[in-house]
Amino acid sequence: MEIIIGLLIIAIGAFCQSSCYVPINKIKDWSWESYWIVQGLFAWLILPFLGALLAVPDGQSLFGLFGQTPAFNLWMTIFFGVLWGVGGLTFGLSMRYLGVALGQSIALGTCAGLGTIMGPVLLNIFFPELNALESLTFAVILGVVVCLLGIAIIGVAGSMKSAGLSEEEKKAAVKDFNFPKGLAIALLAGFMSGCFNVGLEFGKDINFGAATDPMFRTLPATFLVTLGGFVTNMIYCFFQNQKNKTWGDYAKKEVWGNNLLFCALAGALWYSQFFGLSLGRSFFEPGSTMDTLSFCILMALNVVFSNVWGIILKEWKGCSPKTIGVLVVGIVVLIISTFLPKMIE
Image (cartoon, rainbow, N blue to C red; front, side):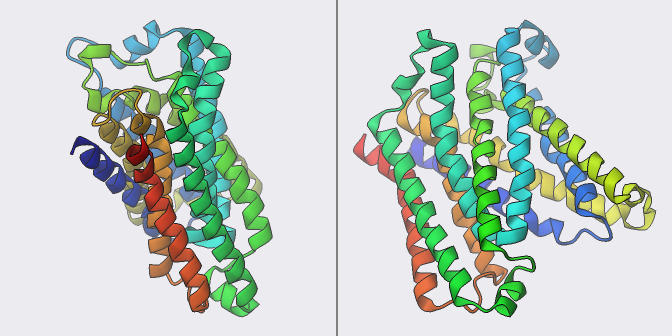
Protein backbone atom coordinates (compact mmCIF):
# COMPACT_ATOMS: atom_id res chain seq x y z
CA MET A 1 0.00 0.00 0.00
CA GLU A 2 2.87 2.39 0.78
CA ILE A 3 4.25 1.90 -2.72
CA ILE A 4 0.88 2.89 -4.21
CA ILE A 5 0.81 6.02 -2.04
CA GLY A 6 4.35 6.90 -3.11
CA LEU A 7 3.50 6.43 -6.78
CA LEU A 8 0.34 8.50 -6.39
CA ILE A 9 2.28 11.41 -4.86
CA ILE A 10 4.88 11.24 -7.66
CA ALA A 11 2.04 11.12 -10.21
CA ILE A 12 0.49 14.29 -8.77
CA GLY A 13 3.85 16.05 -9.05
CA ALA A 14 4.22 14.80 -12.62
CA PHE A 15 0.79 16.11 -13.54
CA CYS A 16 1.66 19.52 -12.10
CA GLN A 17 4.95 19.64 -14.03
CA SER A 18 3.24 18.67 -17.27
CA SER A 19 0.81 21.54 -16.70
CA CYS A 20 3.48 24.19 -16.11
CA TYR A 21 3.49 25.38 -19.71
CA VAL A 22 -0.21 26.26 -19.58
CA PRO A 23 0.25 29.42 -17.40
CA ILE A 24 3.08 30.55 -19.68
CA ASN A 25 0.53 30.99 -22.47
CA LYS A 26 -1.08 33.70 -20.35
CA ILE A 27 2.08 35.83 -20.17
CA LYS A 28 1.74 39.09 -22.11
CA ASP A 29 4.17 41.29 -24.04
CA TRP A 30 7.39 39.68 -22.81
CA SER A 31 10.04 37.95 -24.89
CA TRP A 32 10.87 34.30 -24.24
CA GLU A 33 14.11 35.08 -22.40
CA SER A 34 12.38 37.50 -20.04
CA TYR A 35 9.55 35.27 -18.89
CA TRP A 36 11.79 32.19 -18.86
CA ILE A 37 14.18 33.59 -16.27
CA VAL A 38 11.38 35.13 -14.16
CA GLN A 39 9.51 31.82 -13.92
CA GLY A 40 12.90 30.22 -13.26
CA LEU A 41 13.38 32.54 -10.30
CA PHE A 42 10.43 30.79 -8.68
CA ALA A 43 11.02 27.28 -10.10
CA TRP A 44 14.76 26.98 -9.50
CA LEU A 45 15.58 29.39 -6.68
CA ILE A 46 12.81 30.62 -4.37
CA LEU A 47 10.64 27.50 -4.07
CA PRO A 48 13.52 24.98 -3.91
CA PHE A 49 15.11 27.10 -1.16
CA LEU A 50 11.86 27.12 0.82
CA GLY A 51 11.51 23.39 0.22
CA ALA A 52 15.04 22.75 1.48
CA LEU A 53 14.22 24.57 4.71
CA LEU A 54 11.66 21.86 5.47
CA ALA A 55 14.56 19.42 5.86
CA VAL A 56 16.19 21.53 8.58
CA PRO A 57 15.36 20.48 12.15
CA ASP A 58 15.03 22.96 15.01
CA GLY A 59 18.35 24.37 16.16
CA GLN A 60 20.07 23.74 12.81
CA SER A 61 20.54 25.83 9.67
CA LEU A 62 20.57 25.04 5.97
CA PHE A 63 23.79 26.91 5.29
CA GLY A 64 25.36 25.24 8.30
CA LEU A 65 24.53 21.93 6.65
CA PHE A 66 26.17 23.04 3.40
CA GLY A 67 29.20 24.21 5.36
CA GLN A 68 29.78 20.77 6.89
CA THR A 69 29.19 18.88 3.63
CA PRO A 70 32.33 17.57 1.91
CA ALA A 71 33.27 20.21 -0.69
CA PHE A 72 33.53 17.63 -3.49
CA ASN A 73 29.97 16.39 -3.01
CA LEU A 74 28.63 19.92 -2.65
CA TRP A 75 30.26 21.26 -5.81
CA MET A 76 29.55 18.15 -7.88
CA THR A 77 25.88 18.49 -6.98
CA ILE A 78 25.90 22.10 -8.15
CA PHE A 79 28.05 21.26 -11.21
CA PHE A 80 25.60 18.68 -12.49
CA GLY A 81 22.89 21.25 -11.85
CA VAL A 82 24.74 23.60 -14.20
CA LEU A 83 24.80 20.85 -16.83
CA TRP A 84 21.13 20.14 -16.22
CA GLY A 85 20.51 23.84 -16.85
CA VAL A 86 21.68 23.35 -20.43
CA GLY A 87 19.08 20.61 -20.73
CA GLY A 88 16.44 22.98 -19.38
CA LEU A 89 17.24 25.55 -22.05
CA THR A 90 17.12 23.07 -24.92
CA PHE A 91 14.04 21.48 -23.35
CA GLY A 92 12.18 24.73 -23.93
CA LEU A 93 13.28 24.74 -27.57
CA SER A 94 12.07 21.17 -28.06
CA MET A 95 8.59 22.35 -27.02
CA ARG A 96 8.83 25.09 -29.64
CA TYR A 97 9.60 22.73 -32.53
CA LEU A 98 7.67 19.61 -31.47
CA GLY A 99 4.91 20.85 -29.19
CA VAL A 100 4.22 20.00 -25.55
CA ALA A 101 3.33 16.36 -26.12
CA LEU A 102 6.02 15.15 -28.50
CA GLY A 103 8.75 17.46 -27.21
CA GLN A 104 8.33 16.37 -23.60
CA SER A 105 7.96 12.73 -24.63
CA ILE A 106 11.32 12.50 -26.36
CA ALA A 107 13.25 14.84 -24.04
CA LEU A 108 11.91 13.41 -20.78
CA GLY A 109 12.14 9.83 -22.02
CA THR A 110 15.83 10.25 -22.79
CA CYS A 111 16.24 12.01 -19.45
CA ALA A 112 14.50 9.13 -17.64
CA GLY A 113 16.76 6.43 -19.02
CA LEU A 114 20.07 8.27 -18.88
CA GLY A 115 19.33 9.92 -15.53
CA THR A 116 18.67 6.57 -13.88
CA ILE A 117 21.78 4.90 -15.32
CA MET A 118 24.26 7.80 -15.17
CA GLY A 119 23.94 8.41 -11.42
CA PRO A 120 25.18 5.01 -10.17
CA VAL A 121 27.78 4.77 -12.97
CA LEU A 122 29.40 8.12 -12.11
CA LEU A 123 29.18 7.46 -8.37
CA ASN A 124 31.00 4.17 -8.96
CA ILE A 125 33.77 6.04 -10.79
CA PHE A 126 34.34 8.56 -7.99
CA PHE A 127 33.38 6.38 -5.00
CA PRO A 128 33.93 2.72 -5.93
CA GLU A 129 33.71 1.74 -2.26
CA LEU A 130 29.97 2.57 -2.32
CA ASN A 131 29.24 -0.23 -4.82
CA ALA A 132 26.65 2.04 -6.47
CA LEU A 133 26.35 -0.26 -9.49
CA GLU A 134 24.63 -2.81 -7.28
CA SER A 135 21.50 -0.65 -7.49
CA LEU A 136 21.29 -1.34 -11.23
CA THR A 137 19.53 -4.66 -10.83
CA PHE A 138 17.78 -6.58 -13.59
CA ALA A 139 14.44 -5.12 -12.49
CA VAL A 140 15.82 -1.57 -12.69
CA ILE A 141 17.35 -2.09 -16.13
CA LEU A 142 14.13 -3.68 -17.36
CA GLY A 143 12.13 -0.74 -16.08
CA VAL A 144 14.39 1.69 -17.95
CA VAL A 145 14.24 -0.40 -21.14
CA VAL A 146 10.44 -0.61 -21.05
CA CYS A 147 10.27 3.14 -20.40
CA LEU A 148 12.51 3.84 -23.39
CA LEU A 149 10.41 1.46 -25.49
CA GLY A 150 7.35 3.52 -24.65
CA ILE A 151 9.19 6.70 -25.63
CA ALA A 152 10.31 5.12 -28.90
CA ILE A 153 6.71 4.19 -29.73
CA ILE A 154 5.58 7.74 -29.04
CA GLY A 155 8.45 8.92 -31.24
CA VAL A 156 7.11 6.72 -34.03
CA ALA A 157 3.71 8.36 -33.54
CA GLY A 158 5.43 11.73 -33.89
CA SER A 159 7.12 10.64 -37.11
CA MET A 160 3.78 9.42 -38.44
CA LYS A 161 2.25 12.76 -37.51
CA SER A 162 5.00 14.59 -39.39
CA ALA A 163 4.53 12.44 -42.49
CA GLY A 164 0.74 12.45 -42.44
CA LEU A 165 -0.04 16.16 -42.07
CA SER A 166 0.36 19.00 -44.52
CA GLU A 167 2.64 21.90 -43.60
CA GLU A 168 -0.44 24.03 -42.90
CA GLU A 169 -1.87 21.41 -40.52
CA LYS A 170 1.46 21.06 -38.71
CA LYS A 171 1.73 24.81 -38.21
CA ALA A 172 -1.85 24.98 -37.01
CA ALA A 173 -1.07 22.48 -34.22
CA VAL A 174 2.48 23.72 -33.42
CA LYS A 175 3.45 27.05 -34.95
CA ASP A 176 7.14 26.26 -35.52
CA PHE A 177 6.81 22.47 -35.98
CA ASN A 178 10.02 20.94 -37.32
CA PHE A 179 10.42 17.22 -36.55
CA PRO A 180 14.10 16.65 -37.56
CA LYS A 181 15.33 19.80 -35.82
CA GLY A 182 13.08 19.28 -32.81
CA LEU A 183 14.15 15.64 -32.48
CA ALA A 184 17.85 16.54 -32.34
CA ILE A 185 17.22 19.27 -29.76
CA ALA A 186 14.95 17.03 -27.67
CA LEU A 187 17.58 14.26 -27.56
CA LEU A 188 20.23 16.77 -26.44
CA ALA A 189 17.80 18.16 -23.86
CA GLY A 190 17.11 14.67 -22.55
CA PHE A 191 20.80 13.81 -22.28
CA MET A 192 21.68 16.99 -20.39
CA SER A 193 18.52 16.89 -18.26
CA GLY A 194 19.55 13.45 -17.03
CA CYS A 195 22.28 15.28 -15.09
CA PHE A 196 19.60 16.33 -12.59
CA ASN A 197 19.39 12.83 -11.15
CA VAL A 198 23.19 12.55 -11.19
CA GLY A 199 23.32 15.71 -9.07
CA LEU A 200 20.80 14.20 -6.66
CA GLU A 201 22.95 11.09 -6.39
CA PHE A 202 26.03 13.12 -5.46
CA GLY A 203 23.97 15.09 -2.95
CA LYS A 204 21.89 12.29 -1.46
CA ASP A 205 23.71 12.51 1.88
CA ILE A 206 23.30 16.29 2.18
CA ASN A 207 20.79 16.23 5.02
CA PHE A 208 20.70 15.86 8.79
CA GLY A 209 20.32 12.08 8.71
CA ALA A 210 17.79 10.68 11.17
CA ALA A 211 16.94 14.22 12.32
CA THR A 212 15.55 15.04 8.87
CA ASP A 213 12.03 13.94 8.04
CA PRO A 214 12.39 11.23 5.32
CA MET A 215 9.77 13.07 3.24
CA PHE A 216 12.09 16.07 2.86
CA ARG A 217 15.47 14.33 2.82
CA THR A 218 16.38 15.02 -0.83
CA LEU A 219 15.21 18.66 -0.87
CA PRO A 220 18.56 20.28 0.14
CA ALA A 221 20.27 18.48 -2.76
CA THR A 222 17.39 19.46 -5.04
CA PHE A 223 17.99 23.10 -4.16
CA LEU A 224 21.71 22.83 -5.00
CA VAL A 225 20.94 21.23 -8.37
CA THR A 226 18.34 23.82 -9.30
CA LEU A 227 20.69 26.58 -8.10
CA GLY A 228 23.26 25.39 -10.65
CA GLY A 229 20.57 25.26 -13.32
CA PHE A 230 19.38 28.76 -12.45
CA VAL A 231 22.90 30.15 -13.01
CA THR A 232 23.06 28.56 -16.49
CA ASN A 233 19.64 29.87 -17.47
CA MET A 234 20.29 33.33 -16.01
CA ILE A 235 23.49 33.76 -18.03
CA TYR A 236 21.80 32.67 -21.25
CA CYS A 237 18.62 34.70 -20.74
CA PHE A 238 20.50 37.88 -19.81
CA PHE A 239 22.69 37.35 -22.88
CA GLN A 240 19.53 37.11 -24.98
CA ASN A 241 18.13 40.23 -23.31
CA GLN A 242 21.28 42.08 -24.37
CA LYS A 243 21.41 40.57 -27.86
CA ASN A 244 17.72 41.14 -28.61
CA LYS A 245 17.53 44.45 -26.73
CA THR A 246 14.66 43.16 -24.59
CA TRP A 247 15.76 44.58 -21.23
CA GLY A 248 12.77 46.88 -21.56
CA ASP A 249 10.45 43.95 -20.87
CA TYR A 250 11.17 44.27 -17.16
CA ALA A 251 10.10 47.93 -17.21
CA LYS A 252 6.62 47.28 -18.60
CA LYS A 253 4.73 48.03 -15.42
CA GLU A 254 1.31 47.48 -17.01
CA VAL A 255 1.94 43.72 -17.44
CA TRP A 256 4.04 43.03 -14.35
CA GLY A 257 1.13 41.96 -12.15
CA ASN A 258 -0.24 39.52 -14.74
CA ASN A 259 3.14 38.15 -15.80
CA LEU A 260 4.52 37.75 -12.29
CA LEU A 261 1.40 35.83 -11.27
CA PHE A 262 1.61 33.37 -14.16
CA CYS A 263 5.39 33.03 -13.91
CA ALA A 264 5.02 32.18 -10.22
CA LEU A 265 2.28 29.66 -11.02
CA ALA A 266 4.39 28.07 -13.77
CA GLY A 267 7.37 27.88 -11.41
CA ALA A 268 5.30 26.33 -8.62
CA LEU A 269 3.86 23.71 -10.97
CA TRP A 270 7.34 22.88 -12.28
CA TYR A 271 8.87 22.53 -8.80
CA SER A 272 5.98 20.31 -7.69
CA GLN A 273 7.52 17.37 -9.55
CA PHE A 274 10.65 17.27 -7.39
CA PHE A 275 8.83 18.16 -4.21
CA GLY A 276 6.50 15.25 -4.99
CA LEU A 277 9.47 13.04 -5.83
CA SER A 278 10.98 13.68 -2.41
CA LEU A 279 7.70 12.96 -0.64
CA GLY A 280 6.94 9.90 -2.78
CA ARG A 281 10.38 8.34 -2.31
CA SER A 282 9.89 8.38 1.46
CA PHE A 283 7.30 5.60 0.97
CA PHE A 284 9.86 3.38 -0.80
CA GLU A 285 12.50 1.36 0.99
CA PRO A 286 15.87 3.14 0.63
CA GLY A 287 17.99 1.49 -2.05
CA SER A 288 15.09 -0.62 -3.32
CA THR A 289 14.19 -1.03 -6.99
CA MET A 290 11.35 1.48 -6.66
CA ASP A 291 13.67 3.98 -4.96
CA THR A 292 16.32 3.63 -7.68
CA LEU A 293 13.70 3.90 -10.42
CA SER A 294 11.79 6.79 -8.84
CA PHE A 295 13.38 9.40 -11.11
CA CYS A 296 12.65 7.29 -14.18
CA ILE A 297 9.05 6.81 -12.99
CA LEU A 298 8.64 10.57 -12.55
CA MET A 299 9.86 11.26 -16.08
CA ALA A 300 7.64 8.52 -17.53
CA LEU A 301 4.58 9.96 -15.82
CA ASN A 302 5.57 13.44 -17.00
CA VAL A 303 5.42 12.08 -20.55
CA VAL A 304 2.03 10.48 -19.98
CA PHE A 305 0.49 13.70 -18.68
CA SER A 306 2.22 15.87 -21.28
CA ASN A 307 0.53 13.84 -23.98
CA VAL A 308 -2.80 14.32 -22.23
CA TRP A 309 -2.17 18.06 -22.46
CA GLY A 310 -1.09 17.62 -26.07
CA ILE A 311 -4.46 16.11 -26.86
CA ILE A 312 -6.28 18.86 -24.94
CA LEU A 313 -4.29 21.54 -26.79
CA LYS A 314 -5.14 19.81 -30.10
CA GLU A 315 -1.52 19.13 -31.03
CA TRP A 316 -2.61 15.77 -32.49
CA LYS A 317 -5.59 17.22 -34.35
CA GLY A 318 -5.86 15.94 -37.92
CA CYS A 319 -3.78 12.80 -37.30
CA SER A 320 -5.06 9.46 -38.54
CA PRO A 321 -6.65 6.93 -36.15
CA LYS A 322 -3.59 4.73 -36.73
CA THR A 323 -1.26 7.48 -35.49
CA ILE A 324 -3.43 8.07 -32.42
CA GLY A 325 -3.47 4.31 -31.82
CA VAL A 326 0.34 4.18 -31.83
CA LEU A 327 0.41 7.13 -29.44
CA VAL A 328 -1.97 5.39 -27.03
CA VAL A 329 0.13 2.21 -27.14
CA GLY A 330 3.22 4.24 -26.22
CA ILE A 331 1.42 5.84 -23.28
CA VAL A 332 0.22 2.44 -22.03
CA VAL A 333 3.76 1.02 -22.24
CA LEU A 334 5.02 3.96 -20.18
CA ILE A 335 2.41 3.35 -17.50
CA ILE A 336 3.36 -0.34 -17.41
CA SER A 337 7.03 0.63 -16.96
CA THR A 338 6.17 2.25 -13.59
CA PHE A 339 4.76 -0.99 -12.15
CA LEU A 340 6.60 -3.79 -13.96
CA PRO A 341 9.90 -3.68 -12.00
CA LYS A 342 8.11 -4.19 -8.68
CA MET A 343 6.04 -7.05 -10.12
CA ILE A 344 9.13 -9.04 -11.18
CA GLU A 345 11.34 -8.06 -8.25
